[in-house]
Image (tube, rainbow, N blue to C red; front, side, top):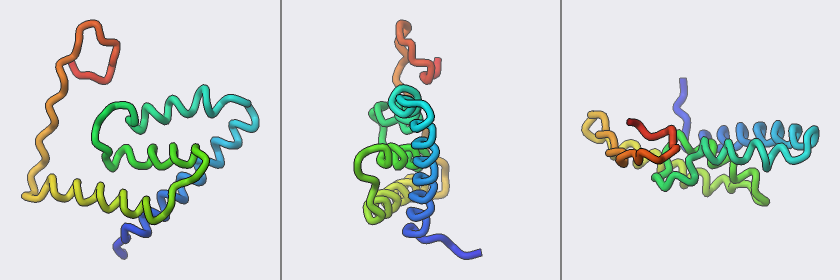
Amino acid sequence: MSNLTTQQLAEILIGIARTQQAIIDAMENSKAGFKSTHFRPMLETASRIRSNRAETLADFPSRLLLQFLGRNGPELSQVVKDLETLLAQKSTSTGDGAAPAPAAAPAPDAASLDMTLLP
C-alpha cells in the first residue's frame, strides 16, 4: 500500500466536499431555503467554527465544506498548506509518543444551556 501525500489527501477532501456540495444543492433545488435554514447552522456546529478553539483535523472537513458554500471554493494550494499545518501540530504535540494532555475545560456555568460542557 502506498503512502498518501498531503497534496493527494487535499485532493481527496476537496472531491468529497464537492460531492457533498452537489447533494446540498440538490436538496436546495427541491426545497428552497434548506441550505440556509437547516444545513448551514448544523454544519457550523459540526465545524466548531464559533467555539473559539484551535482548528483540528476533525473539524477540517466541515470547515472545507463551509468554504464550498461560499462564493469561491477553496484553493488546492491553501488546503494543502492548512493540512500541513494541522498535521505538523498533531505530530509535535505527540513528539515523545505519549498522548497529549487534555486541555482543561472551562468550569460550566450553572445557568448555561451548553450541553457540550462536561459536568
